[in-house]
Image (cartoon, rainbow, N blue to C red; front, side, top):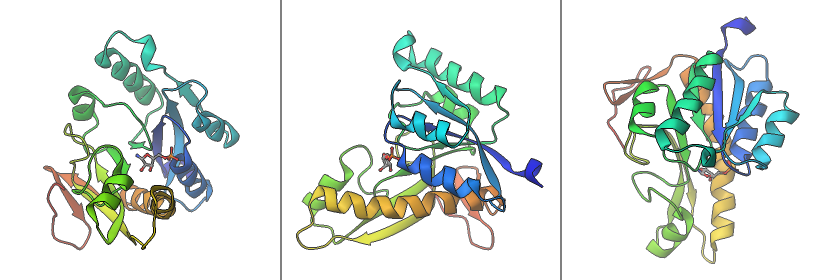
Length: 212
Ligand code: GRF
């Protein structure tokens, strides 16, 4: 049974709390995926300790050691192929991936973003949600396409924006949802219930939805 679990790699750059939620979910034997590799691009990042504590192989690939984005992405791709990875989860990975890499991994590369896409792609999402006066905010798991934070949406979770919220309070409320949503989305993919087909998300038993 264990041999049939989807082999997943997580790419992270920092704190790694989403990595932790995926490690924790995959630690359960009944979970249909296992984390086979963690790749971190920042030496000393907390994500490295989290992977080691979970007994998962970790590759530290410092982007500064590469002359180009293509060379950096090629090094990541080699690690992923060598580990027979089926699906790649970006979890606070702060490097833009090249179109070539994204093409290679199309339909097998997902990301979590701290906003209700298509609102607030990019950085500083909590600040921008507060400034916009939205009463609702949240997070999105989506397939990665070459355009930043624009790929087809797999799942979203909403939180209210409360009167008096500052960035920190809102970020914490969203993060708690991220930690629930990412393993849930990964489970759906690993069970074959969600797929990307011709740029759209197909969910078992639901009509196709377009790019977000
Ligand atoms: C999360 O909010 C994630 O959505 C965003 O970057 C943050 C990473 O946090 N892409 P962590 O490293 O997973 O704790």
